[in-house]
Image 1 (spheres, helix red, strand yellow):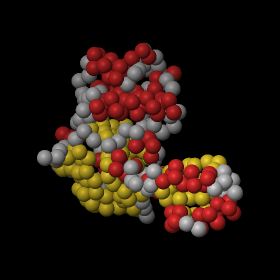
Image 2 (cartoon, helix red, strand yellow):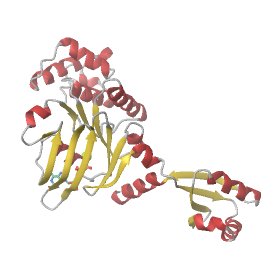
Image 3 (cartoon, helix red, strand yellow):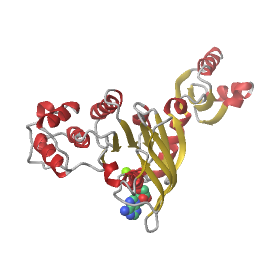
Image 4 (spheres, protein in one colour):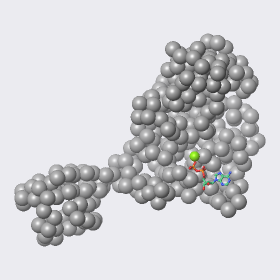
Length: 305
Ligand code: ADP
Ligand code: MG
């Protein structure tokens, strides 16, 4: 039996004019790091706010831990840790004090040991006495995750936890997510608008656009889809075009603009085509492969921009 942690069926949310979430269904299984990917405005935060019972759906059902969210709200929320928007802290108080207060507010009995243990988990134990206003953005994000972990939840929901972080900060959050998943057996629901951020940590994902699922599956399968789009930049474009037109590579040519020839290729064909150009005295200045998923996602994101 597979253990469904989140079960969303035909979920919709209509704001006045905007249908933010449109007939969305998804399942998250125990142990998943589930990537919830989509461009800005796709409906990620709206979905997450419904999962956390902060807003109610217009239509559809949500079950978490196998129970209906509507009927079992409090039981369920007790076992979820989340960061939704930029977490808010008391800047003049220490990280330790902040967690102590937040723990009390949420009604969990948090011992000093538990607070220190959680700070250690997110790598803030050395700075536990510092005022939060002296923290970097990345440290505040990690403190946000610490707050979400304080009551030892089974399910952790993170809405774009790396927003505004530098590459090092992003890496730290990724490592923390993997640690929580692998060492602490947490189920993690992670939203992001950055594909590579999701692919590095998630085992399953969906791509959301306009409130509905566009792509769904195991990250490995989605990324290893057989064809690549490969851009060849060549030195002699007329000669290259003539050559390509004369043989079966023409079937693989998707487009050509100036010196950029874009082919749909299996991975093993890249070097073959490269050799073919070079043997025919056409210099190859660059070969840039792009996975179809990456290309697809870029197009979605482009439309938004
Ligand atoms: P994401 O988190 O993927 O960027 P959101 O869920 O925040 O997307 O937003 C989805 C859509 O719903 C957007 O068009 C947004 O403007 C709209 N939206 C979100 N919240 C509200 C609200 N409270 N009232 C009206 N429209 C909203
Ligand atoms: Mg959002």
